[in-house]
Length: 524
Image (cartoon, rainbow, N blue to C red; front, side, top):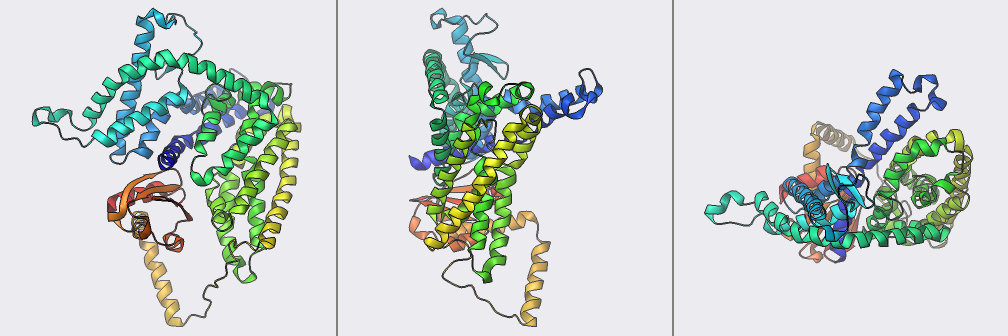
């Protein structure tokens, strides 16, 4: 069950990362349309204003079609084969589901909903269909059903007479039939669920600092399991605290918040649940510095080459797996300390009035928070940076203390020494020749070679039972876990680490995991 949840959580992340760019577009256009920031050129009615309105509308695409994006994205990560066809099947089945709900609510009065009204609580438009607002919960449910049907029946051999209905058609037919009872049940149950969500929202809003601390702590602690998506997903993209999630809500009201004279915490207290990015911007660079300082002198150059790119990735973009997994496997106690410190930082910021959409890295901090908010909320920005820098110092000294006190084997502090020697001219020429040859290889060939090495480390193609991926990890289920090689063999292939859980393995690759996955599939 845990393995299935991990795979599902990873699949959820794939569409989630798309919103980073969309959020930047909306945030930047809001700045460029603000006369207080760019002058009279941004007044309504000017060519400048109209142009950026056009660009902004494009930025709203993902937010306005969020359920559809998740319905299309999840099958790409979960389907065991032909994931492009799985995405098409899921889209058709998901829209069929919504059309059925519309028809049930329109044709049968006992549901108690008058669909002829313009604005109805709990009703929304999804891809042009007036239906129940199931948000991403509905799209995730239908995507899960669709992927199950795809994996089980896509290759089903039908009698020759019915051969035209094989494959994608057969999956859609099964989905069509299944959506009738699913839509009917949803029409009955979901309005009650909406009431429950409203109650949950009230509870979380009332939990205040304790709620912010618990959310931030769990969001970090669950990263090694791959289940952290289930924590932040309902908050950032679902209805846990605000309709359609904090990401969409912040983008929708960004101009209103920027112009408000009241403190942001008073008008958007839910934004306290989106402060987890502060540990990425202020905490992890300091943690990386502590690991560098405590490394052996002979290995500082190697350690710097390892930590600087990883820390910068988390600092700028909010993708923290490279740096977090750098110390997670060598010293798990540091990861726990990181989660606790991050939760304390977010909670303290919230106490002092800091709210917003701070779930990613510095780029998002600037584009959709600090720059648009600075005119009327400069005090919040200054307080946030001040608390963040204080915690940077705390991070550094806590990490340094734990590393030295517990003699933790962080990068550069390993017991075994790497070979150090002088190379002959022959060896030098061979190395340079090899480098030149490698430089001439195509990216495709490099991905294929990396995939071959990872496949070998996983025990060969005969040992592979199932393969999926999320944004940074190749997720593999094997038949015999005893055949899996050591972590060093995966690192030779360019992996940043491996998460082991029985027959389930997560190979940490980075942003090129999609290309590696494609090459990996070609070898099976």
